[in-house]
Length: 325
Image (cartoon, rainbow, N blue to C red; front, top):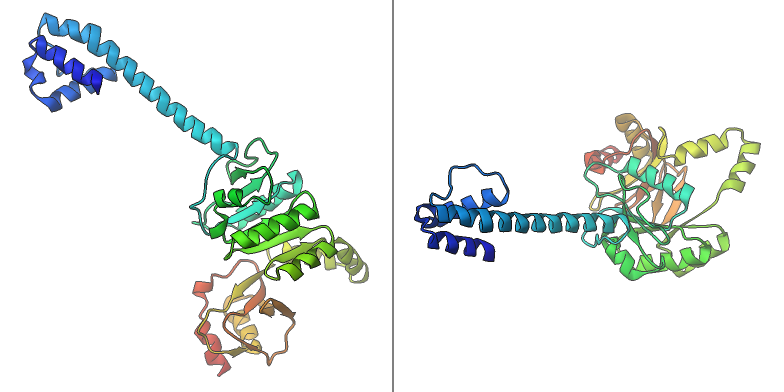
C-alpha cells in the first residue's frame, strides 16, 4: 500500500493527471503493472511519468508482488507439511472415526477397511499415533502425532470428543488400557473399542468402564471350532470381514416405537430387505438365536447378516409393530 501511494504521488508530481485523478483506474494500472500483465490501455503520457513507471512503479511493484506471492505459497506449503507430519488441528471435525496407535501391517489394513466402509459425506478417519514421521496414508486419512497415546490434548486435536467411534490398540496392553480410559473420558458420546492381547487386561477394563467394548484374539477358539466343525473359520471371517459380502451388521431400533416380537422382525427383515436377523442386544447384553416370543423395544440393537449395510432411515419401523399386532 505504501508503494502504491508513493507511485500515485510521483505520477501526480509528473503531471499524469489523466488516470491519477481516477483512483480506481490508477489501482487497475498499478495491479496490471505489478503482475506484468500490462494491458497497455492505461500508461503514462509524459516523459517524467514514463521514468517514474520504469524506475519506480514497475521494479518496486514486481518485487513486492513476487515477495508476497512467495510468502503465501510458503505458508500454504508449511500448512500442508505440518498436516503431513501430524501437526494439524481437526478439533472441529465430527461424526468420524479415530484410530489410536500404529502397527505397520495390522493398522494399515484396519484403516483400509474403515475407508472402504465409510459412507459418502462422512469425514475422513484420523490416525493418532506416535513415532511416525508423517502420515502413512495421506490420500485416505488425516494424522495427528502425539508424544503418548493417552494424551487428552492429542485427542482434542483429532476431534475425538465429536467422533463416531474410537479404536484403540497400543504397543502393549498397558498402553492400550491407559489410552482407552482417557478416550472414554474425553469422548463421552463415541463408541470406544480397545484391542488386548490378554483377556485378563480386557476384563479389568470391562470392570472399570463397561461402556468400552474390548476385543481379544480369537485365533485359538477358531482353530478348535474349525477342527470340530470344518468351515467354521471361513464363516467367522465372512461375518467379520468388511470387504466381503454376507457380513454381520447392526442397527439400533429408534426411540418412540411400540414393542414388537422378535419373530415379526425375523420374517419382516427377510421378506422386505433380504437380510437375516441373528440376534439382539439390550443394555450391552447380546443374545443370539433369540426366542421368537421375545419383544424388541426402542433402543435395542439388532444384529443381522447382509451383503450391505441397511440405511436405518429407510427401514419402515412402523410396519414391525403393525405386523406384530
